[in-house]
Image (cartoon, rainbow, N blue to C red; front, top):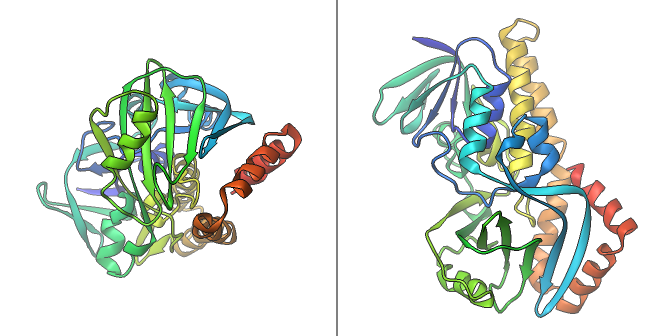
Length: 338
């Protein structure tokens, strides 16, 4: 059977692509939909509203707290943030598409066929790689596509704990050259640490964070995320989400970006399928859309690389400036444009 579009990866980007497609499309993932949370699952409320997934919101926030050493600076935000139930989000978003789903372990691509380890091959007119940092389709075409030195790594645990703010930590006592976070999600909270250098042995760092709040580490999840904005098309494959390095440097924000890029990719592909756009023009439109943010990504990456060299008092000063509503609102609006 030949599909119109076959998408590897049924998380934020893959589901966004599928939501814009009619006809005969296929989602392939090695895990059941919504069963493999690797994200802190914090994003903007309006992002959930835009895709009709408000039912997955667990808690909302009008302010965030930045912890620099022992200092805590509260920063109001003009648009509410939220934490979400990953499984509910994925299942709700999937229902908004007409795609079929196959649980299979994709290994790569040959011609217009996705090769899997356990379910045979799947042929489609258009292939999309939303497989996360491993970029299994893009890497099969270009072995240098995945850049191991341009990845962060994070782990997280969700345990019983209630709070009323999203909290971020820039504290060498927890982790150097990285950040930590506490994301409340109703009756539980998500405690996490991430290394900008991609270091994977972070359990002791996570314990340093949980010890501050007197909680014990529970089940741990996490993984790599790529912050190097890459070519969004490789050979005959469209690439979206973390696979294309669309997670933001510095903040590590990936959900909003994956959904935005995924929706655009899906819109363009549907126009190609409908005969409204030649395939090459559709490819160019998506590439131009994705790469127009390159300068913004490079700026955030420079900040990320400079962060270990910035004195704590300078970070505190910047945070206190952001705590003034006019400055914070302007800065946040500029950040949202990325």
